[in-house]
Image (tube, one colour):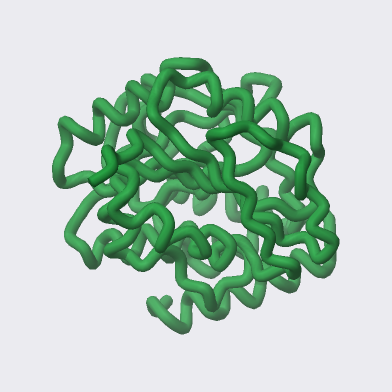
Length: 256
């Protein structure tokens, strides 16, 4: 029987900035662990074929845009019983050499934790508030419409745990999906993401599913990463409509 990988990672690709993506991949390849990176290419043109040819990378061409969660789920069979930990990673994230190893140690020391994530910063160093309470309808509406944000400031701040000291680890209700490190066995037990969400809300949904496993999600700010964060649904009508559709699916599934 082959020895398990320390960690597997999946990145779903569509309309990516190649320079940003290369930096993200190099961050992962630099870590001193037994590892494998799966690049799931959702472009119809298979744009990223033969772009990255390192031995620790496996390219998975989908040939059409099947969405974020469905893309990550395409490698469930590949990581089952082959890796100890699995990282869901966005293509625009940067992190230092020891981040993943230190997060793995925390997971190993907390058997009731299924997923861990670090503090997330914008490139300018500003806090991204990646750990959240489960969203209310009013909070989601306020986040999408700039003019409403001042009126719903208290709701948004509560959703972002701003009353807490965010330099201290704690079990959050949900953690955004740019960087989620799982025990692989738990990610398999969750059956990955709910594929009814094409884009948006699948990261909230999977945290709800972790609750059903009676496990926890640990926000661990002693480690930090940088995330560019495109905020596409605030700039694109198509993405806004996708976000709205996902929100309806989420509240229909889990209640208001």
